[in-house]
Length: 198
Image 1 (cartoon, rainbow, N blue to C red):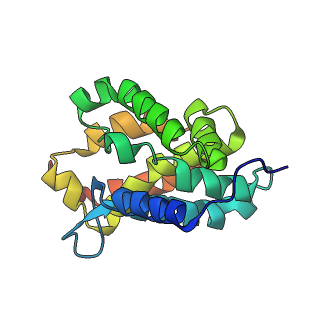
Image 2: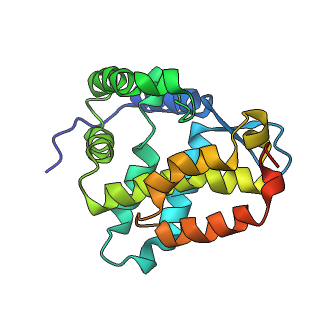
């Protein structure tokens, strides 16, 4: 039974306002095809939702609806703490603490959106099969984007193939999407010009 009060139009405006803020959070990954602008958190979340929706039939034990809600919610704390670039050691160092503080604010501000809070918590706990799957698609996605921009972000941020693999092999090689990661890695090996050390 739903015990959450029915939202009024002001609350819907509040939600739209925070969605606009979420759309204004840029990531370090450039948008294909011309790589002239950076991807926003909204574009990223929508992209991984579409990828998970597309892949869900290949993983029938996963709940597709849960995948979609996790994708849409997974980075929402960044409204309060910004995006953390995985190659920025200083930012990664205190990422968990910043995200924990942001989640506390989000829980207070959006107590009347319990499904959002539950999805963020499930994603952060990484215990369900769906959460683990979304985490791996989230880690795979920037590689897809960088490939489609012909390595623009890798060149701009001086990310060599070795540097990329040092992080991504640990995250993805034996993951739920490991097959796709390994296929993509083979493509990258054949295209060394995508990296600054080529």
